[in-house]
Image (cartoon, rainbow, N blue to C red):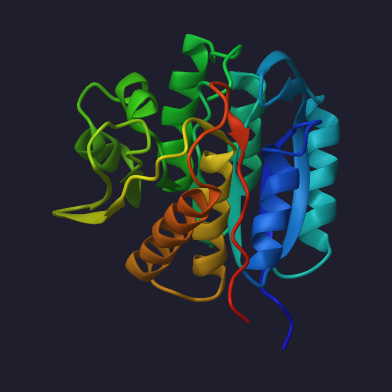
Length: 253
C-alpha cells in the first residue's frame, strides 16, 4: 500500500537539525512520504540563528501547486515562515483543503537568535480563522498568541490546541490536548537532556503522520508525545550547555 503523503511547509536549516529536513526524516520514520515546500531560507544551527529570508510569493504559490498536483495528500504541517505576508498568503492557498492541518507556530528558536515580529502573532490568528488547524504552541508561544490561553484560540477557530510543556520545570512533562469543552493531559517523565534543537518540528511532524495514517486526534497526539519523550530520554544527560540536535528514535517495524 502507498504511504500516506504529508504536505510540509517550512524553512531550510543548513545544519539539518530542524525545518523541512527534519520534518521529512520524522515523516519517513513514521511511514509517510513528505512533500516539502520551502517557505524560507535560514542561517542557523544548534548554536543560534542569524538570518531568516523568505522565498517570493510567486515561487511559494508555484511550489505549493506543484506539490498538490503530484498526488493526493493526507495531512498538512506548517512550520517556520519568514514574515506575516507569506504566512497569510499560504493560508489563503490552503483554505480549500479538506485535510487535517497541523500548525507549529514558530515565534522563537531554542538555540536563540530569532524572535518573530509582533505581526506574526496577528498572522497566526488569521491562520486559525481560515484553516481551523490543530495548533501546537509551546508555553512561551501560547503566551504570545493568546492572553486568554487555549480556550481563546479554540473560540477563534482552532480544531484543537496542543500545549507543549517542554519549557516547563516539573518532574513530568504535561502536554495538554485542548478541544472544545474538553482538555486531556498527556504526561511522561521529563528527560534530563538539556535544551534540544528541533523538538517542535519533530512533534508537529509526528502528529501529522499519525493523522495522515487515519488516527484520531487523541491517538495521534498520544503517540507523538510518547515518541518525542522517548527520543529525548534516549539522548541521555546533557554534555554541553548549548542545544543539541534532536535525535529521532527509530520506530519498531
